[in-house]
Length: 216
Ligand code: ADP
Ligand code: AMP
Image (cartoon, rainbow, N blue to C red; front, top):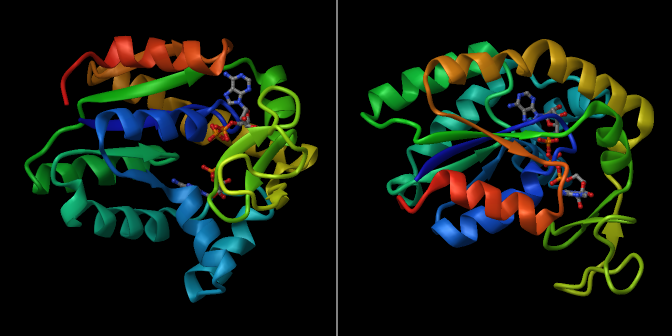
């Protein structure tokens, strides 16, 4: 299964991706996670990406495309993958199509998680992430059993620097301008699935699985 997860910041892509990759046994490729790992390790890529991410801007297409193109050629992507947070611009989607064509493969489905704008800010601002394993929580909608502590690995939770209200609003504006056109792009390719993201996490997941079907 080759899937793209589309949706505005805070829609629940990362949350759903964690369950989807487990079920379909495919690698989870999150460009945001790749950047955050590089920022943590202070690599040259991390230092460059940080300039954009902290402001709520998109990292330039050439940087992101090169990372994904390289990642898709790895052995573990041979039988499928889940792209989360990529593509985010029409130019990225075109570059992805070209790369897949070179590899003689197609995307099976693009899942668009729909959540109204008003809800997105509350979701992103209340998001907390485990420093160690990356598991995502929400202070109100999906809290850990013990405040500030990851229920999976026991490490401390943190708030992303770009999850403050002003930056989230900017990211949503950029989404509307740059990423939303991809809904039409994939609708034309007849591979778009729309899922109501304004439901319980488990219900969103079961809707996604029903829409994806049993093809693995
Ligand atoms: P994205 O990867 O699309 O930016 P996340 O998966 O990180 O979004 O989710 C954003 C925040 O919203 C997180 O704090 C997460 O726990 C919470 N969340 C995810 N799905 C739901 C849902 N269906 N209902 C309520 N909160 C949710
Ligand atoms: P995410 O974890 O998907 O919310 O991404 C966090 C941030 O990383 C975004 O706000 C962007 O600054 C950057 N980023 C992630 N994926 C991309 C992408 N495909 N194109 C450009 N920037 C990206």
